[in-house]
Every structure is written in structure tokens, then in C-alpha cells.
Length: 130
Image (tube, rainbow, N blue to C red; front, side):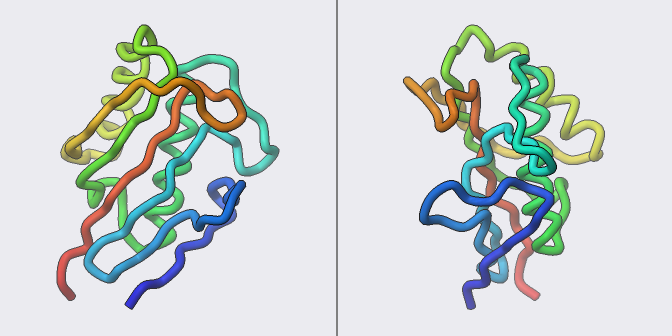
């Protein structure tokens, strides 16, 4: 059964989509841009943007009853590959802080993202059969 995931701890959708979908064994998040859900702000710094996007992903995963350690795949969309090492450092620190195994990951450069942010991150988490 498909269940929509909604939380105020991540920014609301800015289009015709949901924050996340829970399929029972798996949870899929929509791409999370670095919008602070409390005030709608976006930091200028790419490291701060990476952290906020990851916190937004975490909020959706937690709202489904899972944790950062249950994330098995991420896709990172960035507008400038020169930012890759900074984003990578933040990414590593985030998963280390949660004592999580690093998930599989794809990282691609894109021409532009909504609100002209520098990155967007989507995730898949695995609950397993219950």
C-alpha cells in the first residue's frame, strides 16, 4: 500500500508532487533543495546548502518511521562540479554523525535547479519486509 509522507520539518512541495512516499518496504523522498522549512530561507554557502538538503531528507525519512541509517541510495544534483569536494565533505560528516553506513550514490551536474540553489538531494530508504 502506498502512503504519502508529509512533515513540517521539511519544505512543502513547490509543485504537483509529495515530499515522500512510503511503499512499506521502501521509502522514496522527492528531491530536497536547501530551503529552511522554518523560514523559507536559502543559505548562500554551498556547505550550508548541502547540510540543509540532507536535514530535509532526514526529516522525511524520520517522518516515515525510519532513520538516516536506513537510507540505501541517494542522488545528488549539483550545478557546479567544482563544489563536489565541499558537498562530499558535508555528506560524509552527516552520515558519520548518524553512525550510518554510506548509502550508494549518484552525483550529476545539472544546468539549473529550482530557486537557483546549488544542489538537490533525493533518497531511497529501506525498511525491509515486516
